[in-house]
Amino acid sequence: VLHDVSLEIHRGEFVAIIGSSGSGKSTLMNILGCLDRPSSGEYLFAGRKVSELDRDQLASLRREAFGFVFQSYNLIPSANAVENVEIPAIYAGRPAAERHERARALLQRLGLGERLGNQPNQLSGGQQQRVSIARALIANPAIILADEPTGNLDSKNSKEIIELLKMFNKTYNQTLIVITHDERIALQADRV
Image 1 (cartoon, one colour):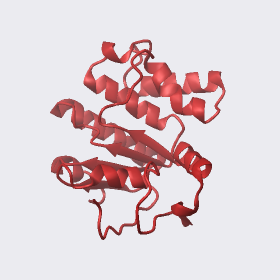
Image 2: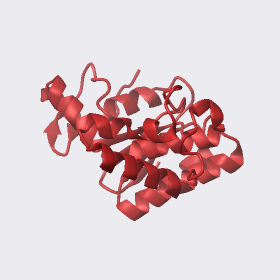
Image 3: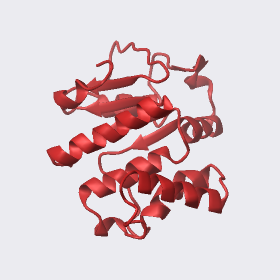
């Protein structure tokens, strides 16, 4: 799918990757986030060749460096908002009290303080996406990879979600990579 792709992304940048459906945007995101391996070429993360990392090293890199925001939210239907947000912190081995408090604080910061105990089917699309963003942020990743984060939302919620992501990018110097087909969203990035 991807041919002759060459790019460099620096700490703290807000980069948009834009293209039509089927152009390979999500494939590129999966490679950048170490979810998939390229069939050829070279990918360096902080100067290390990703191809030389074993499964455990890749899992550690994903857990420590990346926060993922998926278009389909990927929330667990039987878990409430706090429990959904805590999942990456569980894998990272964070103590229960610490991850619970951080999950609650993130959800409150994202305007969901009154929805902490709600399950996904009790939340609107915009609220589910905010839970997804909180889940991506709980481990304080260096990089947030957002695949069509506004694809299922109306224009008001889309604008709010992008503003939230930009706020975390600027406030915490987190690299933000947004995959989109929407030129209006891409134009808000530092670089397309």
